[in-house]
Amino acid sequence: MTQTLSRNTFLLGLGLAVLSSAAIAHAAVTDPTVKARMQGMKDIRTHYAIMGDMVKGKTEFDAAAAQAAMAELAIEAENIPALFADPAADPESEAKPAIWDNMDDFAQKADALYAAAMAADTSSLDGARASMKQIGMTCKACHDDYKD
Image (cartoon, rainbow, N blue to C red; front, side, top):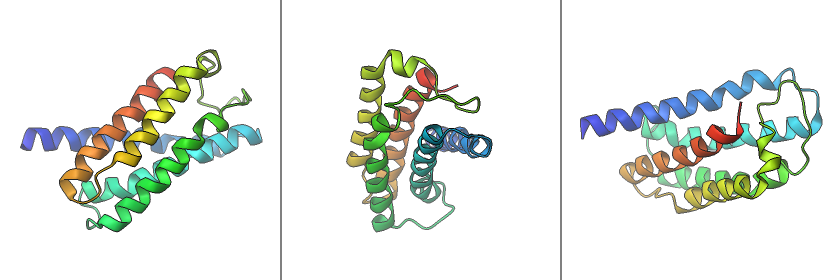
């Protein structure tokens, strides 16, 4: 159990660290389409972090707040394909051109994030922990292929 908890905590922390790097890139972006994409990803990170902080013990577990965060994350995830419909470019963008070469796969990965957020068990800390792991894996699957 301790090893699993430590591994899950590590994966959660890694996911949050990767997501937080986007904040640095935002400042130099000039293209409005790219800015909107980056804001969408930032919003996802914000909602992910709400439940993540609960899982890591930084904040007290609150089932209603966790449920609200996952509902908002699902809304943002549902918007991902629309945010990337235009292949606008910006030197600070972290989006790989492969997105537009593989839009169907990219959209399926966004759908997987939506499904994971909708299925998140926010009724208990253990359920939230397992859900965060699943959500983190969907983020990683997309970022591995489509994010610089």
